[in-house]
Length: 295
Ligand code: NAP
Image (cartoon, rainbow, N blue to C red; front, top):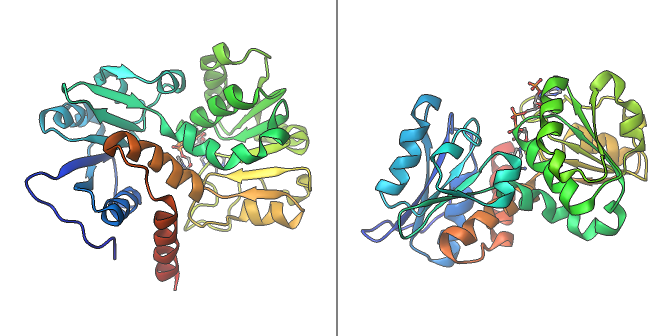
């Protein structure tokens, strides 16, 4: 199952996904659906690149005239030394999830997880500016999320809640330059209840609740949520995680990870192709795919 009408010929511009493993990624489906819908001569394929070969993988993009690459776990930080230039946000986050090969062969890295994450929040900006917020997790995605929240909404308090607090300490330290109001604080899950209860926005960046562990949740007490909360789970499979159904049952506004997934891809797509991604076509195709798989 997949997008139809991808034609590959001598002029096709190729885009790679660099990850390890890559068997579960939706990126080829997303981008090839969009290329087919717009009849543009691009093709996207996933490449499993083991960590010790990531330098070869990135240099290969330039040598083989790829239009660029998406970058996923575990390479988002490891690619940085091989890039010629970084966007300010990729530099700030310390990770790149996409690479553009420029016509002169140089490689430019950006972090479109930042824009993708923010896209579904922008219409809530009035409620979020200067508010208290909490982020669950301190891995790669949390870096983009915490940076995006700090620079966009200037929260009064931004609690980083982590299973391994030393990772959250490191993240807080790395983001100090963007934390004008000293909003960042670090908690273990066991001491984070007040921060979660008092937050206007709670974002899950851990994989807890992701398929197949759909009964898991990164925050087990639904009573900590209420109708003042906005709860955003960046996990996109399933579209409604247990965290979101718990939060919705207590009146919270909920946001799933599918929009972020498509919007981070769209922000990369326009840089590779010069075309705006047809996001509604892509979202509909993802929904149909998911329905077929879970039937
Ligand atoms: P990562 O770098 O491996 O970080 C995962 C973080 O979650 C770490 O802080 C880890 O803690 C913590 N964690 C893992 N399991 C946990 C649990 N059961 N309870 C509490 N904390 C737990 O992964 P990532 O790249 O940040 O990705 C995280 C999730 O975000 C994945 O599900 C991914 O699919 C999703 N994501 C979605 C999008 C999107 O576009 N919607 C984009 C990026 C990522 P330790 O450090 O202690 O292990």
